[in-house]
Image 1 (cartoon, one colour):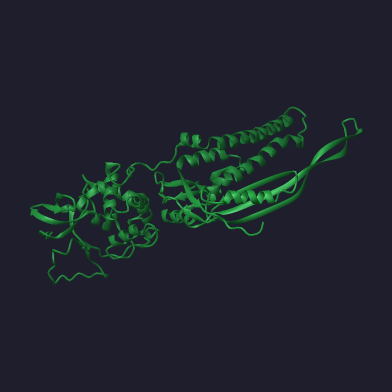
Image 2 (tube, one colour):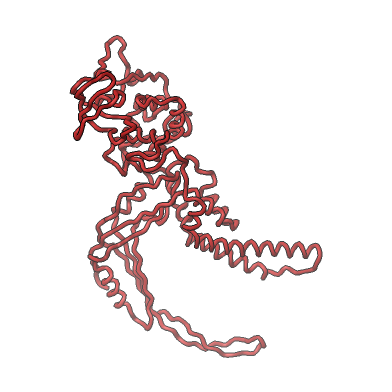
Length: 470
């Protein structure tokens, strides 16, 4: 290995004390297979396999980095020699490539660094070479490779983000290579580690049917009742049609379809306007970085407001109609007469107080709900709104409303962290097909029990708004 006293080294793959991974120190003593490393706060005795020279790269025999076999290699700067002769087969390459920009660029740079050819692809051989000092058995590495490379012979970058993204955002000071070692240890049975707060070896699970029912109880109950009305009416009509054909002469009147038709209209309106999963499918986003950009954009925007007033009074009108006996009778009716309406909109200056988005990766797909929390304690917004409302009071009665929102905020989003274990029916097409056949309750129960749930709140401190003439 060529380790010497006074040499700067980095600690890696320390399983019993994962918090040491990534630390930089200097060797004070070499004692056979063990070395003493002076860290900023203490002195640690470690095996040589847990120590690597600082700022040292891997040398590989490849077209991009030829190795001169006629020269003597300097063991003080060369860590390992990786044999990689063949070009990667395109048919086994993953769909996703590493990105060195964006909020998780540190993981992207580490991914690129693990590739000996620097071709933005990491084979299982290169990955095992990176984990050499863990001394993994073939059976253990097979378990690890199923998590990092579910299909093919190359590490899927989206899977790396799924496994490491949350931990990196929680502990940005921890080097990515240390997180990779901790992830491997978690997959092989350690469960949680110093910087990973979930068991990466466990099956990725969503809410479950019981928790899904608790979370969406009112919506499920409404859909279930409407579906019962629709299907019971249809089955009753079919039964009457069968009786009519076989035994009795019963006329099927169009009025018999009215309960099912009315229930179906209310059912569709409920799905389109009140069910959050509808909006989640409309805003489905794939990839942890894409979801983070979607969640982060509203943080840099000022809230927009919309005001509306409507003034009116009631007028009594006399009308005539025929009663059940065919006679004409007179009655009075209160009619609403709108005399004035007005609207206004604008921007509220603000300061963002929103915490950084931390993805919930307990499941491979998560339904994210967003909310907006505005602090008007330092703003004249409510005073201006009431002043504007009073200015437009032109009649006996007045209805008024105000709404605030961020231009790019999505109320609900289906975040697809990973395509692994995602059923083929979990998409907007199958969702609306189930809706049209009045089976929304069953579909939503199955879908929302598989996905996770997360809530993200945008917090803004608002300041005074400036308005011109009323």
